[in-house]
Length: 348
Ligand SMILES: Cc1cc2nc3c(=O)[nH]c(=O)nc-3n(C[C@H](O)[C@H](O)[C@H](O)COP(=O)(O)OP(=O)(O)OC[C@H]3O[C@@H](n4cnc5c(N)ncnc54)[C@H](O)[C@@H]3O)c2cc1C
Image (cartoon, rainbow, N blue to C red):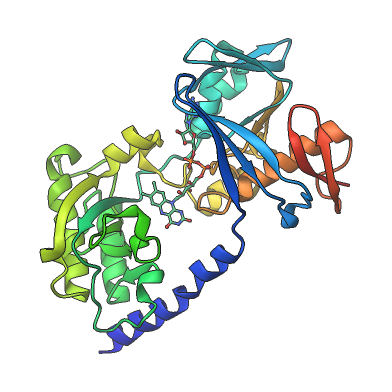
């Protein structure tokens, strides 16, 4: 009984989060879709929290990855893309995995960094996720009216968490994974057909490299069933509502999301890889020594992974400071325009 009450209070606490996120949403309109060029133009309104008093239009290009970060004389000159386009730029902010960014430099990667690159702590995976199409939301006897607006952590005891982590360290998938159910169609009905839902179940901890001699391609479905079983244990009847299953096991996460060793935080989130050590001491300043104009903005930089954009914000601050002559740590000022970057917040 104690564990059920603990789970219920965790659900109640988490329920507040989506409401806060919604109040900060900015209105935007897709003004143009150029299918042949793979471009989408989006116009958004003012963003007060970034001191942007006016909106701006942005063009996004899909499906044309960068293949090279071009350099000359130790400074970036732009980016080459798969379609053959050459985009000239004095500043390149790499939002991809730090490993990918270093790889895009090719022979321009300074020799010392090329030697140190393998020391970035990529870890051994974190978890896996199963995406479900269902005919109903999970019904938790211990839940409340707002339960489905929250992320539902279904860990019945600390012992279970410790056991799952112990198995991970030993290179085995957990006998009883800690499951986190997410029910986005409960508050956005447009993402599922009427009368149906999508439920994602993230599970921890699942090693990317297994010590059991098994392959993820063979055991992914079995481990997905264990995750569905954990939701079933907390919400009896859920398993029979499942209509479609898409499994993203660690090897699939690496392939589909370009995340080396299935580390969804890009680089280990432990003390040895945080602060001035993330991802390596020489890269912790969000720049690549010897390659002027290149900034690293992804989760591989401090403060790391999660959907909160802090690494990117800090990298942008460093880039702006370099190119405006003002230190990144100084106070805020009204937005200003920097050629090629659009209207952006500036620091002084
Ligand atoms: C299944 C799953 C569940 C998660 N759950 C949570 C959660 O509940 N809460 C939470 O806070 N975080 C969660 N995370 C982690 C979070 O999503 C990441 O930490 C975060 O997205 C990292 O953001 P990022 O922009 O740095 O990198 P990413 O989101 O990894 O984006 C990097 C982008 O770079 C692109 N890219 C790579 N190479 C190139 C190239 N050559 N040219 C152009 N683009 C390229 C990739 O396609 C990708 O779109 C989860 C992640 C996964 C995968």
